[in-house]
Image (cartoon, rainbow, N blue to C red; front, side):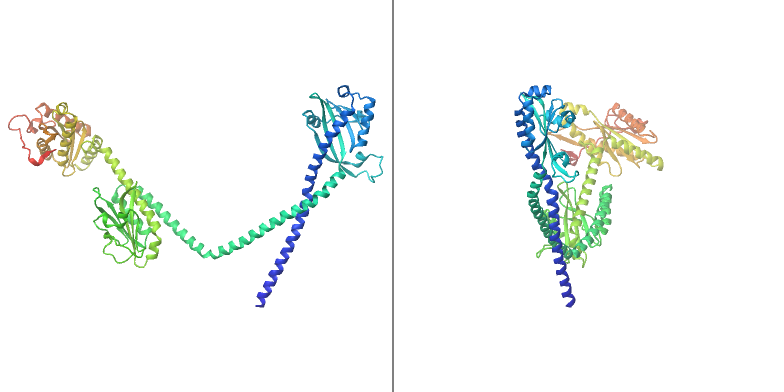
Length: 598
């Protein structure tokens, strides 16, 4: 207690001492301000007063001169004018008067012979020529001001305040010359200082007191803020720890985004998601669902951290998807369990709808581990960011797949286009060269297709092409590639097919097309037939161009022999079947009801 009392006394003493020092500082600063700030103000007051007086003196002097043009033009002053001019210093505050002509040459000086007076300074002359009054305030020797006639000066080194003004003399707008007045303003300046300094002392004191009051208020406010900062110190430390954790999470999110953007397929993407989510959210198990192409169900794609996913779930079975926003189970007093979360054991979970370009593409489901509920709820924002990263990655992969599919697919039939056919055939030939696997190529052309267009219109022709394309696609039951290379021409690539298998497939394709019935409007179109040419690697070519040329040659051979038949490159006679040839090679195929296409 004694130590506390002593401390308080010391604080009070220091406080009083500080106040006393502050008062002394106020007085010192006020005195300094009064001394330093009064001089410029007094000088401005003197300048204003002398400028006004110089105008009066100028009118008085010019009234004494009988002929201004003669005096200033020729430099001659009449005797009676001189007598009047000598009276000016005696009847005014001027102690010296000097008259100059328009060139700045001295005409007359009250101090003695004007021949000893210097020419008017160019600066002063320039000011008067422009019609303005030149003013200058300086300190001069007392001997110069009062001369030796007076005994008021004890020493010759005493100084006086002298105001110098140079006023222009004009007549009819013409510049004639200038009058220079020297005035002793020492006493006037002292009078002004005696009046201004107390006022400046008061103003300076008020300013300093105001500054001290503001400083005191700021000091008190800073003390309060410091106290508040000390109270929040622990919270700030916790926040710093959270920031460090957030920095790690941001780094992981950046890495996740980089890896997801480089994925080539959805399967690879979901594998990356599973591995990253294990590290980003270790306190939660999770799973990802993506809408199927039909958009009636969501397919389970991946799970991690001990979680599991169902093969399919319905959108109506998730409260997050039904409400179109994140659903958090365990955050309210009353919650409802999603169907896809059954069987449920009471643990908290999140359902994040995965959105991409304004469309829901899937669902991210996260469930807390046992005993990690608080950490799980705190990770909601991070989980939301993960859902956004996953959604953009899914959208990018799907868009990339769609763009790639559009670049290799024929828009009318849905078959692969010529570009994809060329690339696939090149790869197939390279594979056959390495492994020795057989490879065959079937070229297909629709018979009399121009007649379809001319007779029934282009819409009917498009229906015929779609029907032929569907027949080709149905014939691809393994690794076969069906392509439309332009117009009514099609190509079927048959890897791992022997020549005999290729002939069988070609004949089956011809029969399948012949059995197709196409209806256009309310009538059935004429029967569709195709001519087929078959070429084998390496018998008919070792590069794509040669193999295509051989298949086209066989195709044209089939057309020359009557169409609706199959020909093999280089052996058309042995490979002919069906069509309009001889009866032993002609194969007819009746169209079953199920093969009819609308």
